Image 1 (cartoon, rainbow, N blue to C red):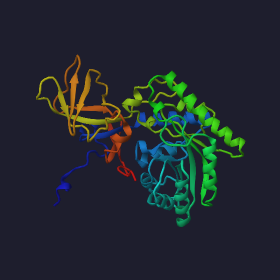
Image 2: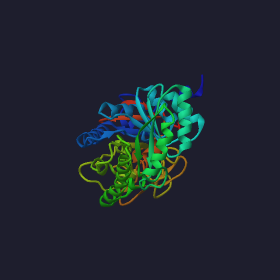
Image 3: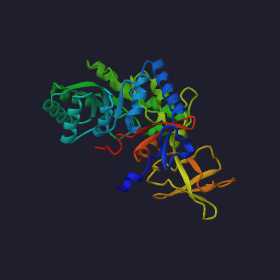
Image 4: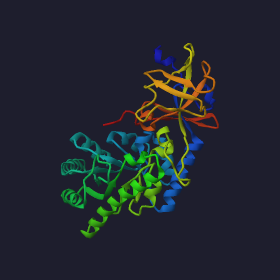
Length: 374
């Protein structure tokens, strides 16, 4: 008998939340579904397509729930990340990133035989790699030229650079120009609603200038894809974005929750990390069994859900220190729920998401793209 056979599942359908083994990633299905419905309704009302980001969850069941509500497909950030989604039946996937090596181009070209695939470019060398790979595989790859609208990471500046790339794309019959990607990640986390509105308008204006210049040059740009959970309400009304790539809205981590929102697109915290108090021996604090190997802290420490006097104070590999401010410390063995600071990398630390409705486990979803970062 192998020792691993002794390990029971952390949760099974019908189990009360209090009996879920910890640390465990939990999803409140009611709040999650309301979040999905709210953004899809806003997209439909604006006449804008929704292409949620799979990098936020890496979980095919989440993508299928979004598509069932009207999403046109998903984004992935890496080619390998897309493969479990294809196997699950997701038929339209945009790699919202550049690739610059032959193995990745070959993998994408083979994946394009199984699903409608597209990818970003900002250099002619990337175009050549994609064109050769598509020719070799006998597939068609959609290409979006990424433009820099203020983020300062990837993307070309201005319509002239786009036109030069379009000349390169036209040399390869198995590449299709499908539009522009215009994404500004840093403005998603500006706390002030007014500042996000202002910066979103500037970013959208830069994208609109490129679209207008392309049109004047005789190039039709049917799709402008970008935006995110923090800017969605402004992206919908921008008049330039035809497709929104929001991801975190489905869960709302602590960092996004710290933003100021308008009433129209206010989302709920739906994802939590269940942990247990493992020690109360030292005076003045409790220690829980969730640390850096269960939580990403790049966007700060997690919050303690519905226990306002408790603060998650310090994380080490397998421990988290919790302090109390004006109230009692939790008891040994007590379960606490944490709101992760950043949902995307936190989910990537877990093999599964335990889905609950009314405090009872309804399903356990595998995080099938976990670790697929090639």
